[in-house]
Amino acid sequence: MGELIILRERRRLYRSVHFSRVELQALLQVFSRHVATREWLDYSIDSGEKKAVFCVYRRAHDFPLYEIHKLAPGSRKSGDFLIVSKGDVIRASRSLDAALRIFDPPLSAVP
Image (spheres, one colour):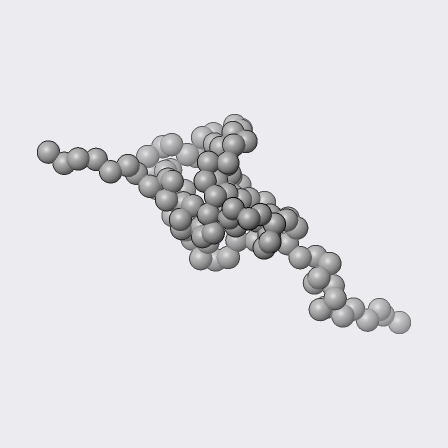
């Protein structure tokens, strides 16, 4: 006979951190803005038990320019979202929108 699988228990074993639909929309909006200016070309998404990562690349075969990490709840005090560049954390924030403000174009004076 078949084996009885209780999904509630099985889901606990395979929990992973992932980006929600709203978070993915925000990430892809920033990505598309930088693709239009030819700064970024490619991206990748990875998810695991402790974090989900959205990486952006200048070229498909390069090292990631930026990594946007979504951490598992309770895994870090400084924020749930990290922006990492070349191994250094350049921004930590509780919300993705606040973290992504680092990619906003700088303000300039209008003559």
